[in-house]
Image 1 (cartoon, rainbow over the protein chains, first blue to last red):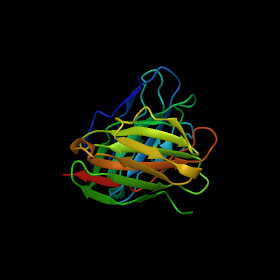
Image 2 (image 1 turned 120 degrees about the vertical axis):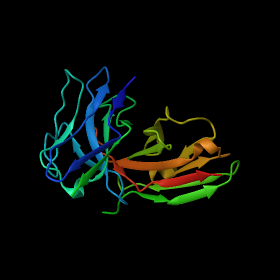
Image 3 (image 1 turned 180 degrees about the horizontal axis):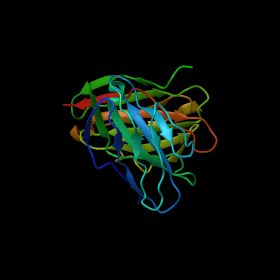
Image 4 (image 1 turned 90 degrees about the horizontal axis):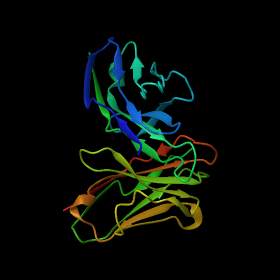
Length: 112
Length: 114
């Protein structure tokens, strides 16, 4: 069965420091990986997806199939990055297409 | 464009009562998903509608949960009778047809069973 693991429940860094939120997955096929973010008092929203290979708000994430990882990185954290981050996996096809499997989430706090 | 709307935002009921949650997806989105986050656990998939049809309901916990999407527009999720372990935040998401499109989430309904 598919599974997404985010080993850190809490992550604290200082403003300007690099940040990396870890995500590992287990899935036998070719999944699609996403990072979703929930800022304080806002709804869950898509941050980025691996097939886009783009940088959003300075964040990047590379899919490493060998290590089955999809870590989220940002070289210089900002206070406004403080939020809950979820890594998620979905099926690209079949009857369960679109169904998201989430990790437990990582609360990122960026201190001034 | 109006986002996904969920009602109510918070519901507090007693064990054994019935509660109905509603989700209005983004107009034109054929795919509608329900998820749930129980305290301390990850967000888990409940079911997926394509228009009015249930595509995948493998995540529904038991037969106390009934989801409908009559007419392929808004959806309701009824819990009858509610149990203590049903407490949590229920999220709805929608996405357009075509490929594996990103899902747009609502604010969620916080359900508290006393």
